[in-house]
Image (cartoon, rainbow, N blue to C red; front, side, top):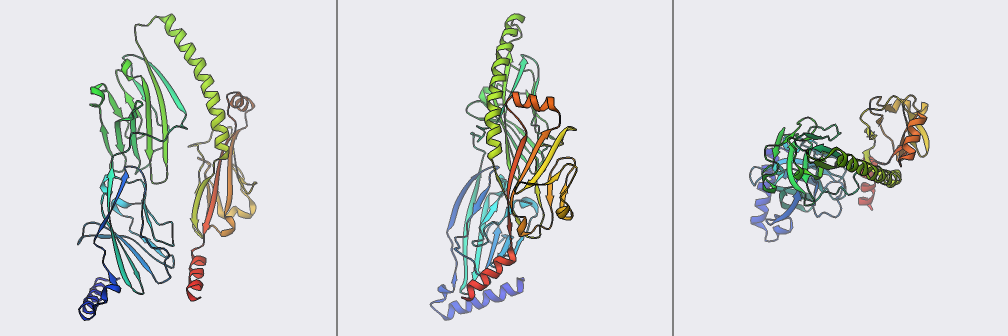
Length: 409
């Protein structure tokens, strides 16, 4: 809608207000602000309080203080959606529920705090709603109970690097916490390319001894001390998902006898191997049952990821759809060849020009062609790696048609 049209509509509304005492039933302007609180790195849903949009209804979302608010998203009841994915909101905005127009902001930052306004326009007029979003610091507790604990042992005075083993992307928020209380000790925001070290916490025990690798987010602890022993927890929030890692660091006194140190290491090794086997068996069985939801609009493309950055030379990757193999690292299903692509570097499966009949359960199995490697995986509580995706295909045109038929009845 142009600025000239908006001014004309505003004048017509003001004329109606002066002429009719019932004009408020045609135009409602809500002045109260609803308060919404969210933690940094998480996602938040801003609700319109609309029950069901009709075909000609319109929803517009704006951000900014009154008088300077900027349009960031708009949609119609027919399903047409437009995002102004620029600047601070790049790739963060999403509308999943076409019935209500609720707005989702993913991987939120402090710079997204402020005033949001949504106006809902239908054939009776326009209603406004304002929300004040406050972004708090990340909470001290990570939801990482199911994460594998990686052990690191180091002699006092040496350095240790806690590697993320994750290919970080622009927009990632990387948080490092220490101890049972989850004290924040380091943060890196790749979007702003800014690192923050909080080495004055815990009575300054880490002062001048913490560093962050800006490319990987790995944490380096220099000149280690016995007081550095404990759990270090990592959280990486992106616009796609959230990843967790946990490290158990043990710093030994440099004066320990070689015999005592050997016994300690041996006991820790036996206990560690046993713990890893038990954990891997539980995690392996749990992994096989997990199903991740994927929603995609008919005609668009969707990428189904594996957990590997680069397959090994002896890896065998098989993708199946409804329990029928459709692609492997070397072959593709002949009937779907024109719409399937398999990334040689990652094993990711890309489905282009997706159709409604493509909806369903996709599975990827990553195993080894090496008998020795497969045997070692088995005795250590592992096995082939699995991932499952339930792909849902949204037919916008069909939804629009159904809404049109429903409005006619």
